[in-house]
Length: 110
Length: 114
Image 1 (cartoon, rainbow over the protein chains, first blue to last red):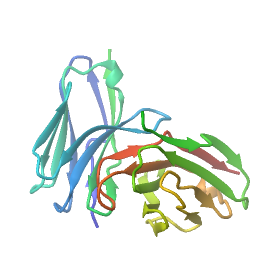
Image 2: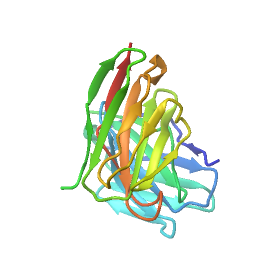
Image 3: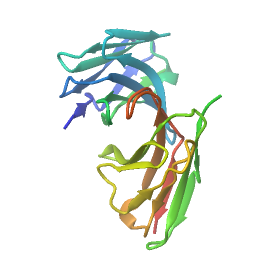
């Protein structure tokens, strides 16, 4: 069974810092990997989707990379802002199900 | 804009009552999913559907049922609510072949079973 791990579980950084969130998965046979943001009491908002044939995707200050062979993805956030404070989850699509990590709770301190 | 709407957003019920959570999507996606989110467990799949009249059990399906009579709706029914079913429930949908594609979520339904 696919297992998805996100470390660290929580991260606190000062405003303006660049940061990296990590996601690892045990089975490299995936269709794609998706990063989400979840604010307290809200649903999950899709940030970036990386197809299995791609190495990275960018959206504004966000850049996600995928290394399928090693079972790893990173989400890079440039010039962090207090509004980036949220929980970030990754999910892998195995072709018939999605498997989620438990998330990294990010706090950006003004 | 296309979206997924869940209702009710908050519900309190008593043990043993039947509860139905509604999910309506306007993406015209074939794939729809129900998850529950609990502290310490993350998101767990309850039921899913790859199209009209198709339903499948997820890893935590006991005590829950779904039906898919059209593309837009996948209601989740708790046959006899239990305190262990107190949770936040999320509906999601995706395009692509069965189970694949970009996943979109509703805002969630918070259920409390007393």
